[in-house]
Image (cartoon, rainbow, N blue to C red; front, side, top):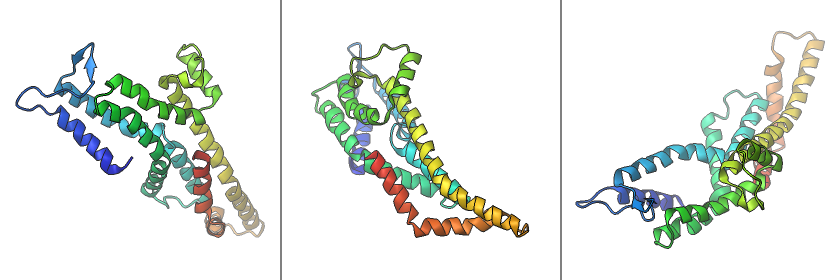
Length: 243
């Protein structure tokens, strides 16, 4: 979804919650037991959604895997704070937008647009809009993790994966992504760990104890990473595994 469209949606939401000279027209379809929600309550709901939005972006999108893998990569290189957290978070965010744009567009077309045009109420729009997200999450959630949260929530197993509730699917997806990210991070550590071991063995064998082995191995690790075009390999592999 384009940033201008997202901003327009937020402005439209805010405009519809601000009371005019007469009582404001409620947000279309936002009702409780047949009664329209008041404008102050709509503002509270909107602010609550905006507060939860960053956590949702970090948890139910590929941002989780990408950020953790890039952090492991920086630790393996031993470059301390280079690249900085801002750079890693920014790269993770832009890669996440690239992957999630088709899903966000489908959610907008199936969920938000019909509600905005008055063809659905909020509940129906949420149900239809959550289907593309549910499909995306099911691609990466492991069956073992889904069964775990079905047991924890004491929810009966659905007839098909498409009937899984988001309260079960979202934590299962998060656990699955954490495992995948740590697996990738462990694989990234191995070649750099070998360099550390070799350098430490050589320095100890020749009796050079003035400099720590980590300081000596750092240039070799960076040189190896640059020679194999490491950023392209890591980012390309991540995108292919998530696309």
